[in-house]
Image (cartoon, rainbow, N blue to C red; front, side, top):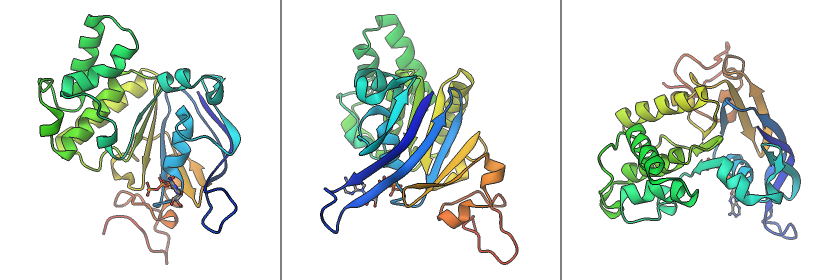
Length: 254
Ligand SMILES: Nc1ncnc2c1ncn2[C@@H]1O[C@H](COP(=O)(O)OP(=O)(O)OP(=O)(O)O)[C@@H](O)[C@H]1O
């Protein structure tokens, strides 16, 4: 369980005109096994909010607890329990080859070699990169690097998996494969949190949608109840899913 209680995050020191409140008094709980989509326009605070889940961002007010332990009390526990894949995978790849990169996290957990090999193989398979362990990171395309970053997070088998705009650079087979694996992880009890302003890939999988606007929770509902309000948040929803009530303009596919 991830418990977010009254979290506010600001950038800047608050004394100048440039200070920004990125997350504004947000409270929410993410139960184990939930597939949560965090949606919202650019700059609505999605990334900042999820970065508080493992201590990469520190709230100016409020608390975040993971599996009952405040993140601030045990950063190592939070980072082990919450796996994260960011928007720019170039910042996350640490090794020279694909296999070494995906193995890096599990090695740091001190797992046995056989278990590391199993996890690396399963994670590469999940992103359609089976057998590519010897490929050099430097020779990969942007989308392939993104897939390696996702594999690295999957190989950690975290309790909670956060993916920030995970599908942007993925081709269709890779996207389908990752979606299948996320579905599988959720069935195994992992909570999956996908951050996006484009719900077309994930709305069908979601148990719940939290929509942010200006750092605040504007929508918190099951997908079928949320879709009617999402176009107002400037997010992209699947064609036919938006609540295009009479007289409204939808942000869905043309
Ligand atoms: N490092 C930073 N320094 C200053 N302001 C920042 C920083 N990171 C984010 N912000 C500001 O905080 C607000 C929320 O940003 P955040 O990246 O959390 O939003 P987001 O919803 O993830 O956006 P996007 O969809 O563009 O990734 C924005 O106004 C942004 O300009």
